[in-house]
Amino acid sequence: MIKTRLTDRLGIRHPIVLGGMSRATAAEVVGAVSGAGGLGILGISSMTPEEIRASCERIRSLTSAPFGLNALLFGVSTEQIDAIFACRPRAIATAWRRPDYDLRAFADRVHASGALHMHQADTLDEAKRAAEAGADVVVAQGTEGGGHVGVMATLPLARMVIRALPNIPVLVAGGIADGAGIAAALVLGADGVLLGTRFLATNEAPLPDGYKRAIVESDGHDTLITEIPDIVSGTVWPGAYARVRRNGFIEEWLGREGELRRRWREVLPQVQAARAAGDADRGTLLMGEDAGLIDSIEPAGALVERLARDAEAILRGRARNLVGG
Ligand SMILES: Cc1cc2nc3c(=O)[nH]c(=O)nc-3n(C[C@H](O)[C@H](O)[C@H](O)COP(=O)(O)O)c2cc1C
Image 1 (cartoon, protein in one colour):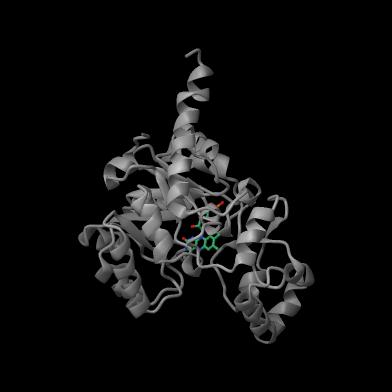
Image 2 (cartoon, rainbow, N blue to C red):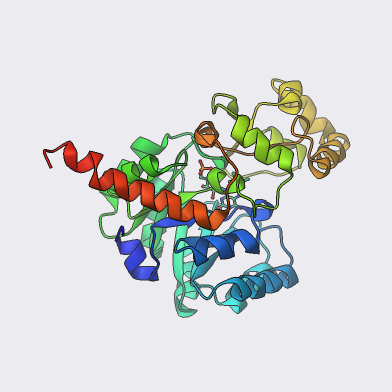
């Protein structure tokens, strides 16, 4: 078994975390990941307080293992935040605060609730500010990742954050989808990894089959970062791009973002209808470059166990052999 400060702090078996991914995850994925010894995190940012409460109940019906809830700080309401605390998760994960957001007050409230505060950062500066605010775990998220990302690649960002914050467990996110990627992150000095895209291609993920198949079919080169998904939903995301698969919808609007800004109210219903119909060419398919490493749709719990086994075998085998046994 792989032992790190993360597995020790949380009492989990594997240093593998399911990133909170809003409507792209559900209680079933979280329950499967936590039940298999990782840490499942549910993204609650588009849920009502009642949905948050019901999801927590469902997760607890699936597993007694620790799990987390995730909030996008720029957009959540007081009622949603209160619902997170009422659920009493073991970890509360945050991301994308506006610069003026008081992260220290939030971290203090997390600690008072007995939970552990995890904050995802796309820059060294944001990682340092999260640590200063009292975050217990910092996630260094590189631009290779799926969903909303910054522009710094995972490898340099992870090393810079790990070097700057030696006393805080750092998780690496963005572009990791197999045991080798996990082993590499641990060798870099990380205490674990946080995976998004890999868990979208699971049986439990509440996504249309077309989306899951698009991940399996992707070679990773067909993703790009763009503001189009946010423009079409009228969202201003603080400082992020969305990494998506290049499809018919994205091709249609690339280079015409100004026009989309004027017409988003007219275009949005078409995108929503495409999403609901599972149309992989006309919806917005958030996924990371690591889609190129994903060959199959698997049960989430078995996936966690396989990834942990593969990472451990690489650390025991190849990593040791490189220095003569
Ligand atoms: C569909 C999708 C939705 C996401 N939603 C959220 C979110 O609500 N909150 C969050 O902190 N991160 C979100 N992320 C980012 C992930 O937490 C994570 O940083 C990223 O997926 C890691 O890169 P990977 O996809 O290469 O594993 C999302 C990612 C994807 C693919």
